[in-house]
Amino acid sequence: MVVHNNFNNGKPKTILHSCLNQVWIIPCLLTLLIAIAYTYTLLLPNINKVLQIYNFTVTSESIRGSRTTESAECDVFDGRWVEDDSRYPIYNSTNCPFAERGFSCFENGRKDKEYLRWQWKPKECGIPRFNAEKALEMLRGKRVVFVGDSLSRTQWESWICMLMEGVKRKESVYEINGSEITKTIRHLGVKFKDHNITVDFYRSVFLMKKSYKVPAGAPKNVRMTVRLDMMDDISDQWVDSDLLVFNTGGWWTQNRLFNEM
Image (cartoon, rainbow, N blue to C red):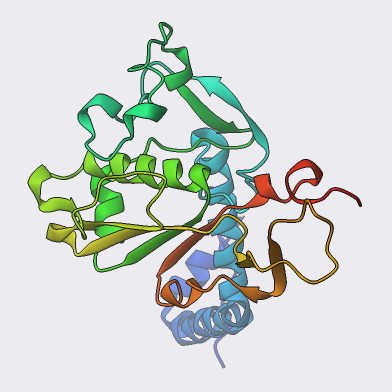
């Protein structure tokens, strides 16, 4: 039996000194391996939670610093309009062949231009400036459809003009039927040939089926009816769209649709 002195010149030996002793090397290695195995088995089931907490912390700090729209906490609908001279306007309507001149305030004599520089600013984050090239790539091979009244038509025109800013060959963008943009045409479609994108507009003021056949016994001032249980008769032309934008709210008002409530 060998007895080891745990003192060296009157001083106690450290654990390292003990482990360096040849007799204790194997027990120390076993103890180390057991400790590593225990730590591994303890953390492994919760490693995903640990990573999630870390990622959430880093992401939250990044969001608070950069204020981007990637934050799940950001409500893009909660904000206000602010002026931004550095990034707006996004396009010049005088250079866009699809913008109706009758709706261009600038071309019809308006002197101030501040109305062209408004951007929407959410309270909790920032919205990056519109990137036409990126939008064209995201919509490659897609069909976008706007449905509604003249407000929808001007939105349709604006969207086309925004996308045109990213088109290198302007002549590759055209109205599919060769039609001029007017309020009398019920369907208009613009093709972005190089990206295989179609942006359509369908004029449907109520979105519902309307008829000029007046029911028997109706008041004399009734000139048409709207079937609330039936969609517009051209609605079958919207069904294969990849992105569908509706607008009709301005017509469902008492003074436009109802005489009595």
